[in-house]
Length: 298
Image 1 (cartoon, one colour):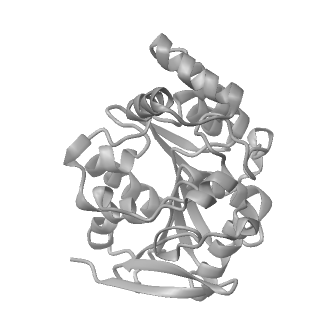
Image 2 (cartoon, rainbow, N blue to C red; image 1 turned 90 degrees about the horizontal axis):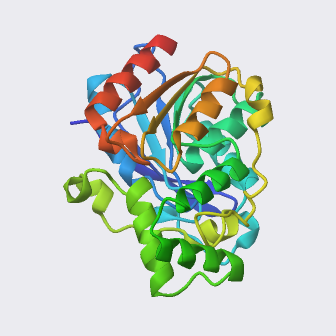
């Protein structure tokens, strides 16, 4: 079993929790940093990758971004924007001496990678590769795909969601039921109740971070990330990129293909029997590809 090390990094007068599986060895293998989704989710589900530390003799670094989990904070709306979350990543690399690394990002974490590879080329020095897992390059594309999929739902659920989007009232039993159905189709673990403990463990999500960063609903972003638009700049990413997504994923095949088409030399794996967390739903096969990719780019 990999050694687990936990700690806190000072950040902007607050604290960022981190968790490390395994140890850095003199074997030429760069550590893997894990960027969780949300914004406002937690590192928890990345614990399914602890086995990679043993199987690949590689250090795995995960953390709870400011505003959630063991880094929980609220009452600070000025913090919930991509610039702060990016600065936190840079600070973590410096604090843990991660001069070289691979980075895996899921959902919002994948968005962070795209921003990293385009807007922060100097800070990205030493990043060996990206693994973009169910991320996206465009909030407007994400919204269009979500609205398209709503049209595939039962008529009463379409009506409940569309009414909420029109009125801005995201409450009520009908709306909640429609959202639950949508998330079960595209987001919830495909494994259902058989998911590992770390995926079902109670967590302290950053609700304020999510609402300020994305908005009060999944479908139409209104927060600080609503203008996240990088489709036309994907060609600027120079870091080798592996895109992995599920066939029934919030990151639809169109979204994933848009990233693959735009990022030079990228590779794309589309997993069957997987939704928004394919590293959980297709864990064993995913880890094989993850390990292969990192070793190819060390």
